[in-house]
Amino acid sequence: MEIELQIKMNEKLFLRNPEQSELGKKIIMHSIQLIHKNGFESFTFKKLAEDIGTTEAGVYRYFENKHRLLIYVVAWYWTWLEYQVMYRTNNINDPVIKLKTIIKLLATTVQDDLSTSYVDESLLHQIIITEGSKTYLTKRVSEDNKDKLFKPYKDLCAHIAEIILECNPNYYYPKSLASTIIEMAHIQNFFKDHLPSLTDFGENKDEAGIVAFLEDMLFRVLK
Image (cartoon, rainbow, N blue to C red; front, side):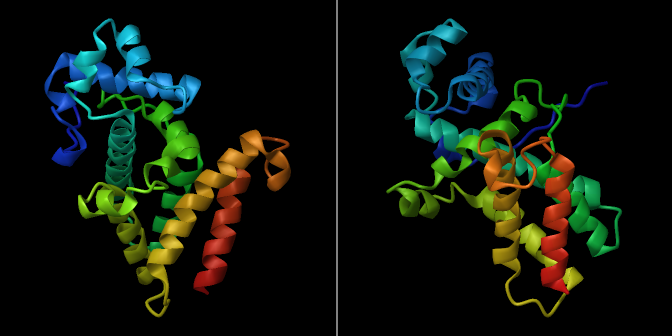
């Protein structure tokens, strides 16, 4: 029997819950595909509606605008990733091994999770790398933050920070280190694929090298 993973989303992200209808699920699935293929700048609700075979007005019944839809799918990913972190580290006692497991999750190619039929996590991970910062690098960031739209990202950082403190209870900057590791995993992957002269991993598209680099940096800091 297949189990469908259910992720509860902040209700302020949508006008109508997309998970409660087939059209809503198609909006999420096709928006991920289109943003991954063409980029967020060229993504429009008109193109999305044409791709699905519905009306633009139908899409607007679910989301106020395309930026709010981007925040939705990015927040969905952070919630899913925190679940993966908790699941894969649940039976591990050694905080060093926990952190190595997390780094591998952050820095390597993500496989599609079959328990979420309308979300392709492998494509969504690539969107996080290329488009994720666009959710908060806006003039509305403070207002969006008050609405707790970035809570999934904060929760993931807080979870990693707790494990950092397990590794070194005297470390002063666990939250800063946690968010830095997340962002570095993504920016190094972006540079690897698009600006290879800015990394040591571009020539061979070396994900394992990024993992080794992040581990080296993290554990040198914690020692």
